[in-house]
Image (tube, rainbow, N blue to C red; front, side, top):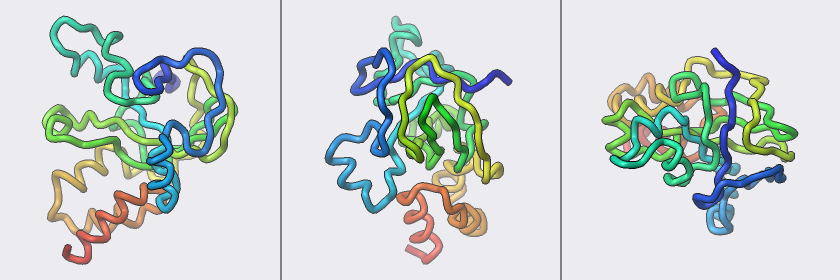
Length: 187
């Protein structure tokens, strides 16, 4: 497998060129920062695999034209929902980022092979830029790929054992852990 790679970086559908400082709140706006304080900034950076653009693109548009249009911050190569795991920690330039939870899930995502993307939290602030390799530092939960998490929450809702095991994953984002706790308590 090739080294994971952040091909392009976006902020509100505009590509960011050159280096910039990635802060703890990542790409969250002021409203989201306020909401995320209690959840540990789990959704600071939304990431989407480049290979999905060619699968999802609309007629007449190529995948390069589609990048940045779904609200993602990173368009990545050599990564997808089956090869990225909760808690995966990467060095990107001077920053350290950690996978926290799957990206937004819609009915379309569930029908199209769990193409949800995922979120990173920022563990250490630092300067980053597009066109950068990601160096894997740690993989504490190799059993919890992004795809596996999405399956437990949305496709295998009655499997309380799997829900309990996923809930035990301490690096899973707070919103997802809260949903699992409610399910396990019968809500």
